[in-house]
Length: 543
View 1: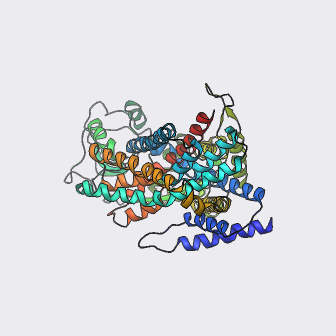
View 2: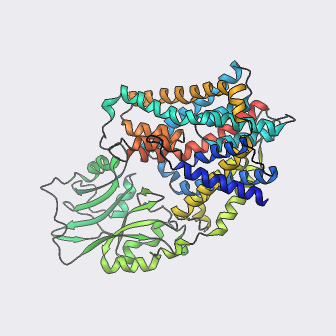
View 3: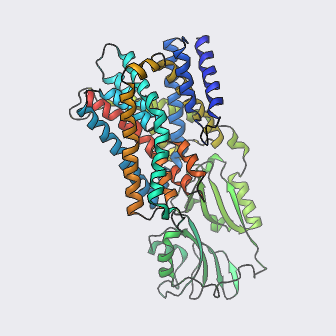
């Protein structure tokens, strides 16, 4: 046990150190741990197989669960408007590469197990390999299952390097054909908009703010109101009058509808000097929800306007800005942007906590409970027509689904699932590094023999096809038939292919952060779908 543990740590440490070294403008990052493990096994490093198997699986569980918890709170929000369109293009890329594997299975004599290993390396997605291996364990009838699993990992190791380089090659090809799209377009990504409007719709005059919200299906917040030279904060009972000036926070895409609904948007000459009224000094401040009693509470039930005299203009959750609708439930770690008098804002801050210290200590009960439920879910067979044994989500699919659900809806069960970004990154990094080190140690003994004398070169060629063809085709279609910029499409391709190295290459040339935003929008769903589809394809074919 001690020897195995020492070797895993040594391989991980050396791999992470070498992963920081730049080759031209590139670094391998944590992926280098995989190749160091392969070299160690090739030169005769011996480990306990049972210990290695446990560490590899536990590392994968930690990674996928922490990933699910991190993206869960903003998972639904990321689907709004263009986020949904980006994910649909990402889904088309995933389906194309999966169909390519199925076509190769029927066109060649290569087993579906090895082809899924090739695909995992071609799309640089080692958790998908773990999921496919779990499906093989559950479904395969091979007497030498350990050798088959090792060959799958070898196929991934051989195709992985070109999986990284191939996406960069595709980006360069697309840039040659669509150089005119390398310019940011205003509104390419949805974001919050703060505008000044006036009330000139007679159907609105005489109605309260609460009544107006019921008339139109738009999420917006009226943060300030100007009337006859006086500035104040409206409550839900405030009655609007003609020629009132309003400061409204909404999604930018809703601004035209809001303009038509209220009667018009104030021009530069018509805008009010909101600092002119010295009797009311309004401040804008970000408050942090840290008291557990507010976890899962609907925003409307707090009656912040009436009780505290403040308006919540936006909520930031998992780096995604949300419009604070009445039915939105707060979660521990939410950052509320509020507007009000200084003393009122301070009263609210004391009420909801607004302290970093309570968030520094992760709530470990929910972490262990979530992992337990994830493993339990992964062990339940899902019966599908034509498959006698059913399909199990396994240790890769179950924990990521439970992680997403815990992150998104745990607050409704009064569970504190908040983990700081640094703590979550620590858990994810530890998990994937341990998994990669064990994967390399378990599959590296025959790596070079397979590459030079076995089917390694064939795997490499097939992997190059699965990397380049679907990525190039989807990238061309998106750039040709949508208004997305090259940066947004590049981030989409890098996120769907789980390729942070190509993203770094793209960011080095980008004029803004659009590639990173696009990458973050599609990465969670793509990672989830790769894991689930890998298990599904292997289970269906083997059954």
